[in-house]
Length: 112
Length: 115
Image (cartoon, rainbow over all chains, first blue to last red):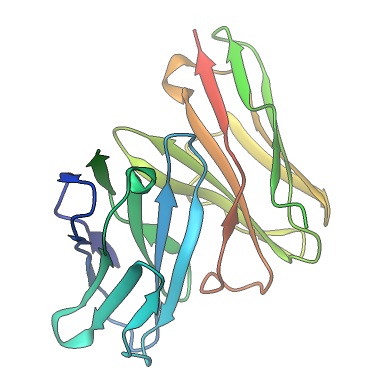
């Protein structure tokens, strides 16, 4: 069965610090997709990124970057120069052939 | 373009009452998903539809839960009778391509409280 582990339950940083959210996954398939979603205090789930298992290139989008390493089954998310508006719960998710499975989430608190 | 629309946003009801949650997926999307989020169990997939047909309902907790998708633009999740342990946030999501690996876009959720 597929599994997603986000070992960091909660992280607190001060504004402008860089922060990395860890995600480790387990799967037996060679073809799969990884996702990150953001859940701000307002409660909605916002899609951030989708990455397939054949594309190990790191991705950068503004202050966000993602590091995908198949060798360690990790798909980590870094926020550079964090801002208070980044405060949210961040979910990593894995999709194989049948369904999308979410990790437990990491609560990020950015203090001014 | 409008995103996924869910109604109501908040629902408070008493144990034993019937509850109906509604969802309108993004136009042109062919898959629709219902999730439940609780502190204890996180985000769980309840059921999903491809082209209006239920594909996997293994996540539906018990017979008190039922879901329908009568057409491509509307789905309901019904709980009858409701119980306090059903209190949760229920999300609807949709994706364009009918495979679970496609990106799912979520609605704002319905916060259900059963007293």
